[in-house]
Length: 112
Length: 121
Image (cartoon, rainbow over all chains, first blue to last red; front, side, top):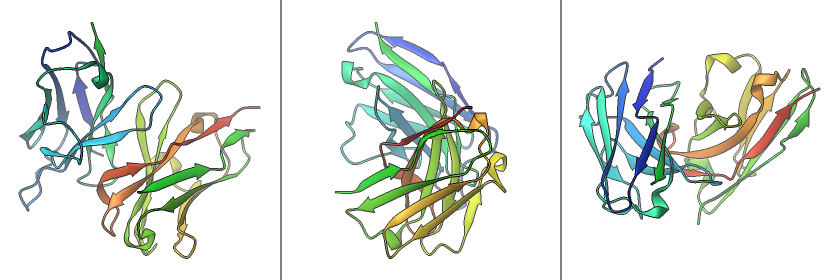
């Protein structure tokens, strides 16, 4: 199974400041088709998870452009250019290259 | 719009069976692979199982193989998770999620609100 490791696990950020979450996979997520099969999800308080970014860097419909994903192979990063209060929640990186699909431990973003 | 509504959760003694359902609407259910993902209280997300759009292929996390069965009824637009012999560690919110395309590929673009299963004597 592919192991996903996120850091930090807790991320306090001032409003308007940038934030960055790192994710590392135990195997490369780069498919022969050139796509990295790495998604990012957020679970806001009291809500179901929702898709933020798929295939490493493609924002889901309705996701603000202050969210961006980057990386390749085994190392990936989710960046928020300017954190807003509504961004509070737990962020998960997820590999969807193969089953079992595996999630990172989650990074809890909070507003200072 | 896409709607996924889970049901069937509740408080169940260890060793008893349970069947979860996920009723879908707003999309052509028979065209999409589907997933179950669970979340133990205060913990992270754990993928459990998926099934292809036509039901021919099913995949499970090792810890539930032989005890959980994922299935679907495309005529009823409904996904199921049959859980036999529940263990305490199966206590979790169970979410159904829609995959991308017919082969249950990621990403998981739409999620239900979840149904809580509590295993306790």
